[in-house]
Amino acid sequence: MVRLKGVIPSVLTYCTLVIFLYLFVVKPLLPKLQDHLASPVVDQKDLLDEMDIDCEYVKNGTKPPNLLKFMEMRSVEDQLLYSKDRCQSLKTLYRFNPKSLSLEESNFPLAYGMLVYKDLPQVLFMLSSIYHPQNEYCMAVGENAPELFQHLLKELATCFPNVHFMKRPPISWGSHEIINSAYECLQFLSHLKTDWKYFQYLSGVDVPLKTNLEMVRIFKAMNGTANVEVKNYQSGRLRGKNHTESPLPLFKSSLSALIPREASNELASSLMPRELLEFLEDTGIADEGFWGTLLGNRKKFGIPGSLDFQEWIDYRENQSSSLKWPTDGWRYYISRDQVWTKSACRNYMTSGSCVFGIGDVPRLLTSKALVAHKFYLKSEPEAYFCLLKEIRHRSSNPDPKFSASMYSELPQVELSRGFNMSQLTHQNWIL
Image (tube, rainbow, N blue to C red; front, side, top):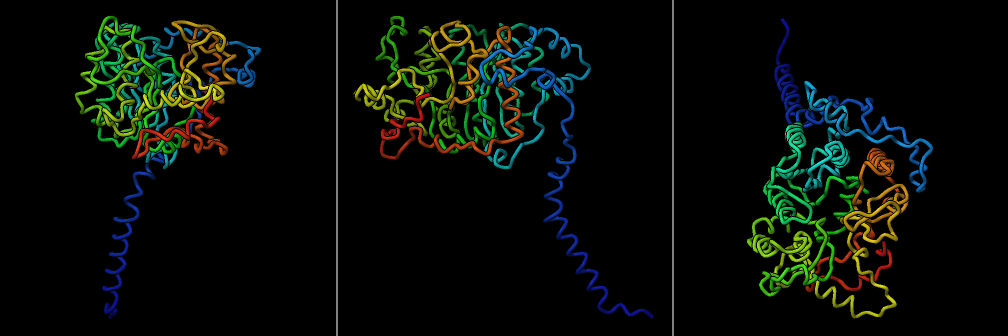
């Protein structure tokens, strides 16, 4: 007869060990393992891959031998409209990253507010170029946009749980609804449970100049400080209103801004933004009086990450002319690369700013800004698509030489004052 003495305790010990390993080691890793195994190797080419462009020419600012033909927007819309599975068609035409590209990016999600109203294929190129599953995206669309555009974008937003469609009142160039919709996106995103770290505003004609990983490292270096353009507000924009009736001293800034989460949360819950929106109604280009005013009055409206713009402007204007302070903010403003002078534009001007083309690409590749504004596919589309290809390449093959250390030299919030003036003379910030 086989003796079982000592065997049963050994079996129980073994089973206990197996159960322990499964519950506390194997089981927590299963989702990641399944996600890894379920993620197919990208071997199917999308629209961007299929574009045969010699981008080495474009990176040097010269036209390639074979130019792209004009892209027929409606053909892409038709493919989506008549598809039996629009989500699958979308992911076939455009490449959306199915998982975070690194643990560092996964632990530092970002949020985007976008105001779009036309040219769906270009909007989707832009969205797919910045899309990562850990981030959050708010897409505000005016109800005066084409019905097909609204219909397709609303349905396609359901393909991704982190892309949120927001229908807004009619929007037109320079209208008050532009900043109202941008603020609504910020407010919506601030209430999400996702622990995103920075908000960034984009338009449908922007191109990212930095990869998601590069942006994450730049934001870390910024250390919770907002980044908005700083200019004096022109009284002529008030159209007869008295500036003393404004809830805060007014400053001019671009609609594009970088806002840390803590500041976003307070802006979303405070009554001050609504009071400012009400005051700015019927003023000239209301959106250019919003972010700078809210984030430039640290002493009077102490939003986290804000600065004291008046102290900043006074310091700049009182320095020796030998410092050659720029008047357009390029030394410190990194949210958007936008050119306002014809002499600096290598393509053509519209609505007072440059539509970038091939000749602008070499400079944009070295720009410290996060995105470039603006590109139209009807004009030198090679510039647009080669920049997208560059970002895609660097996303999959991070540049080992990239360093975000210089971004820590941007003016940052101090406990005792709005910013460190000694940082403003750093010559690296002349862009």
